[in-house]
Image 1 (cartoon, rainbow, N blue to C red):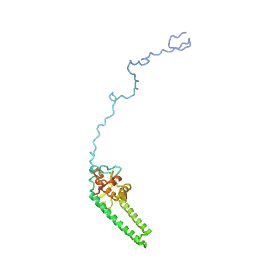
Image 2: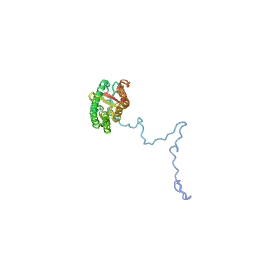
Image 3: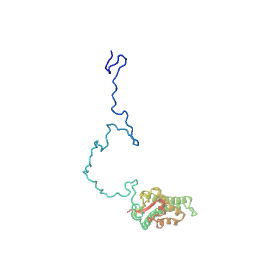
Image 4: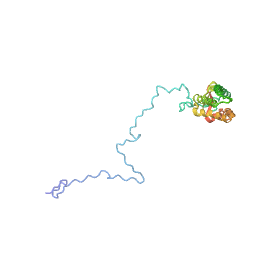
Length: 254
């Protein structure tokens, strides 16, 4: 007995029969791209579209409201000084000749008076020390009127003490205060030419040593150093040889 239903299994042949597969609804493979046109993969269906293609755009928040406090008021202290807020608190603006602190250099007359005051003070000290040295000489003079070895040593010690006191007077006051007693009375101050700071120890020693060492060679050389501001500085800041070597300058402190 044979089964007339084509979908029923064929028991005679021993092999089941299945319905044929449905025909495909579209092409099995995408069509090849046109010649010369690049081929790009199609984005997934859930990829958001670019703005302007129909997709919703982010909300616009508009212009922020003005500040209720208004524009900041200008500083009541005006413009800050040049150099303020830098690493060096001594940096200030230069004047017409580039002097720290501005203004014109002090006159050579005031500097000469300051030097005379310092000289008088040191002369008083030298006079007192000389009296002590002469007293030692007279007390230890031999019968022949010649000073003894002790007297000579006392005199040399007196001169050495005077040099040390002169060095301490000039160097210590210039390094720590920028002015000796004579300069303070005349309103003068020695500062570094680059930034207006106090000279410090190195420049103060150099400034003192140059004229004093030259005076040991020839006394007039020390005078040449002190008068050199008249011709040695073409910038008009009246810096002598000792100031140029120590990189200092004399300014008005008033």
